[in-house]
Image (cartoon, rainbow, N blue to C red; front, side, top):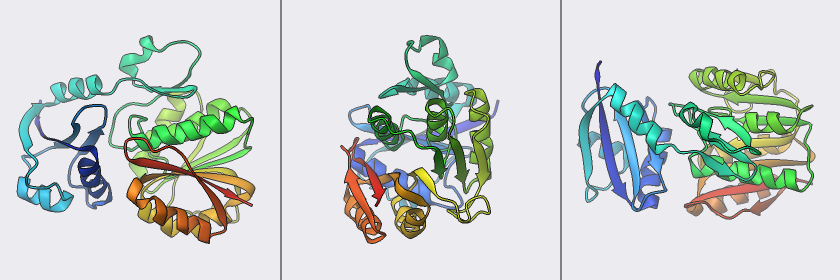
Length: 286
């Protein structure tokens, strides 16, 4: 079994979230995968490499401050899987619960189950942004809203599309991502969760024949602040009158920037309670 390498850093959540965001934006990727754990004190960032990493190069690329200790150790593959699974416990978000196969037998009855494995695609539910989107969507359902057309933009693992498919029996649901591997994983997740009718496809933003001229009653956009701002006019046009977009992937200091972009696009923006420094906004078309 080949050896992997793990870099672990512990610090306040904001500092590590900034580093994780730079990892999200880097292309080509700086590492195999990374996970930010906000349920520890201090928060913890784990980064996985297939070769021994250059610490100075990693710090320069991620912005991780030099005064934060970074431990780099070899980790056999089988141990990494075990450690990752131990750190990813089931996460509840309103009526929804997100879990991995290793916890399948421990899930209580009465919950809408979303089985999503830890992997390179974003959106396992353990991140505050995915949980924030699920809570916002749960609140919509509680209010009696039942959108008939749903689009998960930048779907990652398709957790949000699957949540919609499990609660909207007759809705048309589309899910796209710029990353072909994420789309492949999304389709696997849809099949595994009993929602094979979710239409998963590769697209850069809103640039795809399936989206041309389309409007949706609900859009999930759990991506990054920069793309959210750039896509604001297009997302506004892709909403039906009265339609809503649930926005996440932005830190609290980016909230005003994103909100102003969607207000400029003609939407009314509502702010929900942040989760560990991550914001969720709901923007409504008149």
